[in-house]
Length: 146
Image 1 (cartoon, helix red, strand yellow):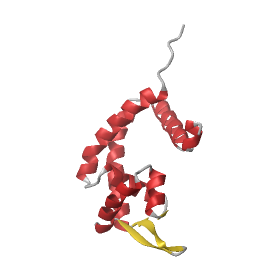
Image 2: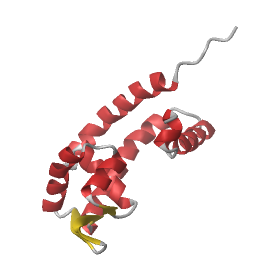
Image 3: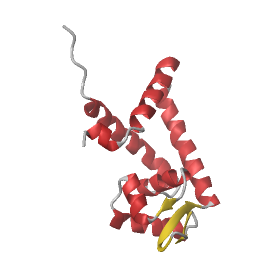
Image 4: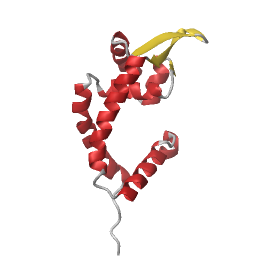
């Protein structure tokens, strides 16, 4: 009789916590909080139409993300411009400095990750990354069944 595999969350949650702990010194070296880095990563995909929309898209509390956005704007890493479709709203975009910082931070984080991924045979590594990308791209409601 085969032993049942652990649940996905039971395997992924400790791994995710360890990966976040491994990222923290890199984020600190680049002067970023985890939420600031998440914002920079998300805005790389394109502008966000408002703070509330951005908060929802990244799973952040919209009242707490304001301080992160204020800091990123003060540092010249993002811009908040009036939305031409709705002057009450702001469109958030990365600046060239924000893009450079995101790129440098991501390169350093992925260099650390590569040391971990190097423990897997090449075919397993690529399969793992492909499977993870596929699952991560699923809409939340498809995973939760809501």
